[in-house]
Length: 392
Image (cartoon, rainbow, N blue to C red; front, side, top):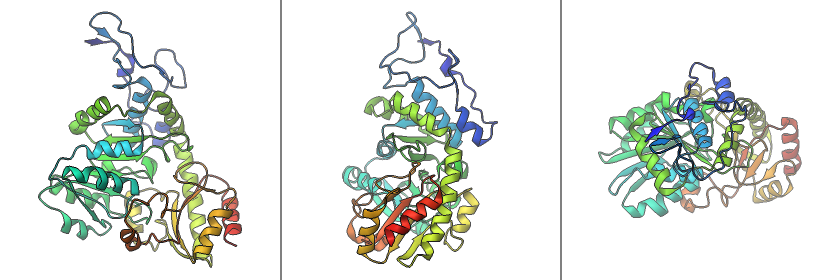
């Protein structure tokens, strides 16, 4: 069927600097009307012009112009060939693990988001897939774990919530030596601070709910691929599972992306100050923050990232301090999630990492006194003042 669609011709804008790319996106404005705000195509289906002449769009489960604009923009920002927008970060990860089959061996970061662990253990392991969890901040651990049947290496860097940093280039070299697909979860740093594909990743995933959206008002997931090798797989996931992001949510992510550079700079600047303050507080026993110069992965971060982001974890001195902090914060909000404009404090033990077995949590250091905080874009003096009164 012949297509006549303005939306299928676009300039990737690869010649622009990043701050301009996030503002102008793929097409940027609507090519037919000139609307500066890319339209929300709130439709299930599309009219054919005549027999054998289509518009390039047929049914929104397959593709929708608003979702397409988001996907093309994310491909530009991550320097990939194509992107796919899903209904959640979990749906995005499900589509990635959908590449596997029984007998495959998969290596994942030993410290990773509890939802990713749950997908691996509760869904895909029953299909005969063998998952192994490795601290890839030491490349020798990865080397030792690789097998001839290793089909995927799935890396978080920095990890959630212990902020371990791995060398993306070195992990890519090891994975590719075994012909394994190398996947990087780039949720914490976003393409503003870190772009794994030019460093060697085959696939990048995001919980778009977090910094990509930036305003705590959308649940979304993004997959970006290096080249067309993986295109058919992810198109099939969207077409057959019906888990593509809707037009309204796609539009909200497009709008959120326009301020990504500004927000990430503020998150990063605020987090540096708060991390140093926490380190000096008498009730704080340890702070996990990749931006400390004495952090084990600091030099690696400097070599592959341009910032450290807004995420900090820390351990308090007692459960009494934990309860008081989580109960007494006022401007800072006790809530699950991260990456929004507001500062959120989270209790991983019962929120983000409840799916991780207790013995593994303890081994990692996620104990009952462990806190994770997503630093927002408020005035940093107010963030510290609120934490100070809640810890008093």
